[in-house]
Length: 518
Image 1: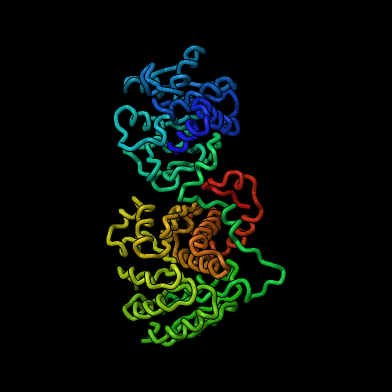
Image 2 (image 1 turned 135 degrees about the vertical axis):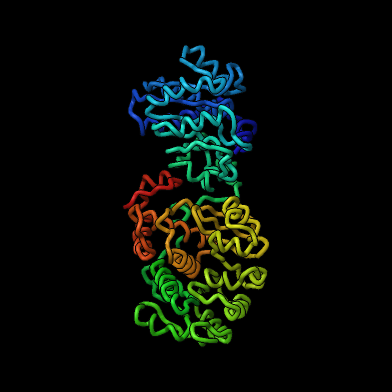
């Protein structure tokens, strides 16, 4: 973003003062839609360009009739470049400007915060790369402890814009108005949990400077554009055939959820290949799915000899999923080795398949098509030999580094699921909430992604679109506890309808993390 700003000024000739004015205007415009005139607004402006944006916002709000208290966390005259121009303008306009030089000024600031209807955080911006300490940390604590809603300018102060890490302490915002393009730190936790609703504001940075980014935030329009049309003469054989290898005693539910998800996501035919001993239970419960019995090594464990049957059946399908509810022992590992090497169609490996792989991830390099693997943080930790905490603290790097190492597409599940490919590209998904943290949710996601692959979507985009739609279905679940995976599955149809309706609130603001039900 810094480089895009520089090129906008130096190459395209847009003066920096215009960019800053536009940024402040966009923040003010958003506030006009949220807060009535005469509201009491406290603006905290840091010493850099982010603080300059805050100065512009304060000036525009005051002119519009808001009651504004402006506090600068910088020494008088210490602003540089465009921010200095705005400081001088404000001073010459007799705007009541107050400077915070240390902890002693906090008492007066806190008196203002007690009366505030809104607090604007323009303290630190996207340049934070070290721990926040001293009175700046005290200012952040004061903001977090006040009762007024908080709007952060570009990014909550204290959040690292590249990693989402909290640099000692950080502002917890209700809204973040970020400029030109979303920042990684707004969608990587813990920073993602502090951003509130995210609004991306156009400040006239040329699109060509933003298109170079290799990490893509998945949006409703992205998913709509890649979903294939269903022509009027479509039939069950023309809209995708899925084969799922899954299940074991006590784990028939995982197989069922995966198969039903694949059907609901649009596949015309779904074959569910399971150990022959559990076929009667599944046939009694499933009407639309075709059950394929597989020979067993022992009861509930698919024999490696079943590889021939699976490969033959896969040749009649468009995508293969392996793993939900599957036994995780050595016998499955032998079977998996054969399937990875011989599968004639793209495949997705989940759950039991990942456990059976263990740390033998180089096995994936022998696949004809790039496999998709779908680890949650614990599974990723086992496969890489690090802790789950280490995975979570650097999710994007972990996914992008290992996708090259293993030659597969990694779908690292969790809040803001990441999809990374060996070519260096990645997707971040903004949808989903706590309703997805329940048994069976991952099985639904596997079925959804496999269905998309079978319908002709490239595997990496199918994974990204699948994460978006699965998260959207979760967002449409009523808030609160007590939800099960089947309720998320029941919302898939509503999620597809929501996507097609082009709701203005969501489509005009595709980065919002909270989605309003239809």
